[in-house]
Amino acid sequence: MNKEESKKIIILGAGLVGSLLSIYLAKRGYTVHIYERRADMRKESMSAGRSINLALSDRGWRGLKGAGIEEEIRKVAIPMHGRVMHNIKGELAQQPYGEVGQSIYATSRGILNCVMMTEAEKQGVTISFNERCLNVDLENATATFSDKKVYGKAIIGTDGAFSVARLQLMLATDRFEYSQHYLQHGYKELLIPPGENNSFLMEKNALHIWPRGGYMLIALPNLDGSFTCTLFFPFEGDDSFASIKTKEDCTNFFKRVFPDVVPLMPTLTEDFFNNPTGSLVTVKCFPWSHKDKLCLIGDAAHAIVPFYGQGMNCGFEDCVVFDQLLEKHGDNWSALFAEFQQARKPNSDAIAELAYLNFIEMRDRVGSAQFLLQKKIEARMHQKYPKQWLPLYSQVTFSEIPYSDALSNGLRQEEIMKKIMLLPDIENKWDSEDVEAMILKHISI
Ligand code: FAD
Image 1 (cartoon, rainbow, N blue to C red):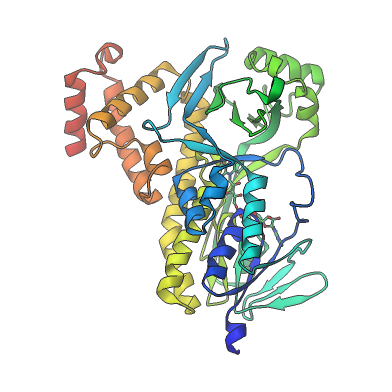
Image 2: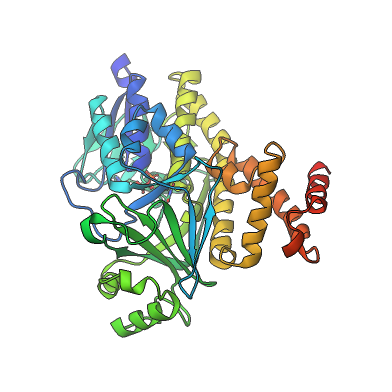
């Protein structure tokens, strides 16, 4: 293999992670060719119902900054300072996400992906569209398409939750660990259109949640004044996708459980029946790589449920770590891949668990008075003792703390808070010195 060929890298999938990673690789002098199954979304309109906006937080911003495209995305991102909870009577409760100045950002998946692809091309990356990889030859770093085979020094599989590259690792290697777990819930995207002159019909700088026990609706703002809403709902059961068969069923259900949103959704029933119902899967596997030939990154290695808003953020953090290891190992791909998977696997497992736990929290607890009180106590502790008590949400969303450490810290904090919330009359003495001393004592044990 001559010098030119040793720099040739193939990426499968020009999604969020593949596009970002290609920029990092191109900046380090690699010749990158991405093969993407879909058409070029810069030339096509986005299909409805495919998660059109995402919450971007600190880990994701670091990934974008490292690739030099942070500023461009900041221009089109809407800060969300906190949650606004809508109860069944339409009453609102606000809860900040972190300290003043800390926000997560609603960002259009399409804009983000388009900006990254354009930036990748500026850096010399070639992207071929309508190219669905059918197979990967692990020993020769060769990818097969319907009409050709292409080869490189290495192949990076960023082809998402249903990765073909991963399938090949599973079929062709010994002792490959794999699990996938589907939630009993699926999701459907719905729309709150803008008001007059592109005004927002609800608080713009917030993530709206309608928690209802067995299911929930959320809404994130878009630049044009609309909100993309996502209904997370059981596939089967009394209130479920299966139970809503007619437009009347749909309207009645929404009027009963999300009454304040119905007047804001003029196309509710059309959207409900026209938009696809997505499933929610957690995928875990190991190893993520084969020798110096193939490595999985992003959802291909670790798809998670979306309830912490971290799937993309985690994938972007993968790119940052990958780039640091490129610096360390240079062209020694087998060392790089080995260290990458060792470093990231515990963290991707941890965020998978955190995302699942947040599903339970958002679905069942987020609207309850007990939950709000607990969060108030935690916020107070953080304000008074920022070094001793950093809320789990902040560790995940606004820090670089490895996800695995955040998970263990968070479980420990939850144990402490369980004891505190059982104290008699906690509603009235939550901000007392006694309660504070008790928490500090538990922390120090
Ligand atoms: P993908 O974005 O899936 O990209 C994979 C790419 O590979 C696609 O372009 C696909 O067309 C291409 N491809 C697939 N197969 C092939 C093939 N055989 N050959 C060639 N190309 C192929 N994350 C957040 O951080 N914040 C959020 O708020 C958030 N919200 C979400 C809400 C929902 C409802 C869902 C489902 C996910 C959400 N996520 C969120 C997760 C986020 O969407 C994913 O983690 C992220 O898209 C992963 O990026 P990726 O590039 O690894 O995979």
